Length: 443
Image (cartoon, rainbow, N blue to C red; front, side):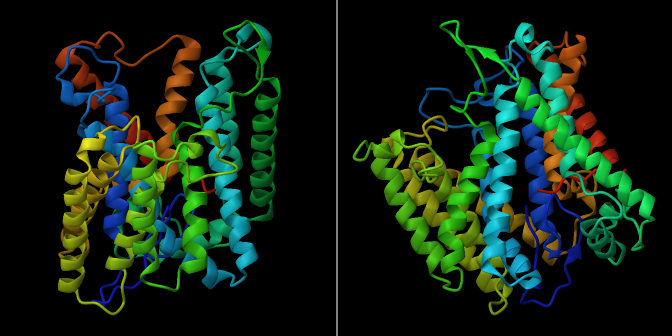
């Protein structure tokens, strides 16, 4: 969810096709995103494997965290890193703030729709819908892919293809599906519109037929009590946009917002304030402030590394100070608990601090030293993130609908780890092929 800009060091940035934005970009953001996608797919499949050490699973109600508990906050952190770049590019394309806010609301709505599909996927009543829950979810996601895909012949496609065709610094993307700038024939434009319309019909149709049975036996429609990761990202993205966009010209504003969000998170975790827990997200999208704090940490990091006035050494020092400060604060706030499930301040701060350090290392390796060939196999996932995110879900629902599972018998101990590794590589391979075949979702 990001774009890059020219850095102070005068280094050229690669131009690639993303899930929803295009501009010059810092290579390490794509690689960081790709690594996060890699780990996400791996740990999600590993969750069903039994007999592994504790650190390979989420920490449930135990006070602590593992690397698994830091995958979701890494996504949020990257959302924050991407926001200043995306806003700048959007305003450069169209200076209207009304249009910018329309785009923010539209993207939020799109993420909420996808989140609701995933959150309700396994709860449908096949007898009432005349279609199994997995088949319903697969069909709904297929409609989403058709509707939000960037097709040849569209204005967005022309922009994307033009950018990628002139990219000399991203051979991975070129191998993963670069195509030259050209005008598509009218027939292809018509076909793209037909496919988008078909996708919209599928989406609306699946939502209309959805029915579930509640615990007390009542027939109900979509459950809005949980938004799934994509929906949560949507609400958090909206909340941070509300804070960031009006104050984007002030360099100190993200730091101030970060501090206020931290205080708010402390207050809600310590039960000094309970009212946020009783408000729906469409009234109060900030929730307890914890997830918003992680995203704002990404905004701060983005501003540090994308500064056009600071030297590389100054950027690294400021990033190190920020990372160490958040980690020190996390230690001080550990008495309030370290819990992903409860989104405690310490969990958020540990996640932000570690993300800053990881990104700083990737920035040094990939953007400063230009050593990024090693990441060729994950960069398509980082550049085509939303499609990659949905590939495993499409597999799970499609396989469940026909009663198939890849290496399903390997669900014990280290044999399950092997299965998860194979599954992850297959999913990344499928995502790379889809990228090559121009299947790129853009919200």
